[in-house]
Amino acid sequence: MSTATFYTRPDVTGIPVEDIGPNRVCLAWLATRRSPLIDAFLGAAESLVPTSR
Image 1 (cartoon, rainbow, N blue to C red):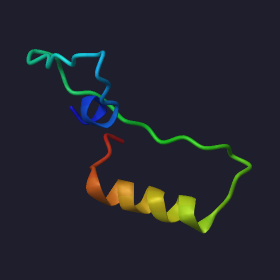
Image 2: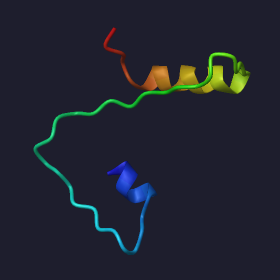
Image 3: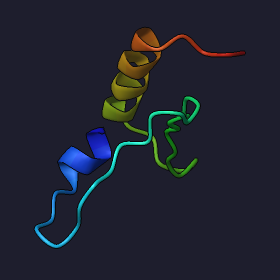
């Protein structure tokens, strides 16, 4: 639903699928790119969703 809301287009109609299992959202960034903002975003994301590790 979030993708359908974010990527709204007048020529595309989104149709909800009720019987599909849960999905996974992943974060990725270049290993060579270090930033306090990346660390803060990762920390915020980890605090909201329990991991399956």
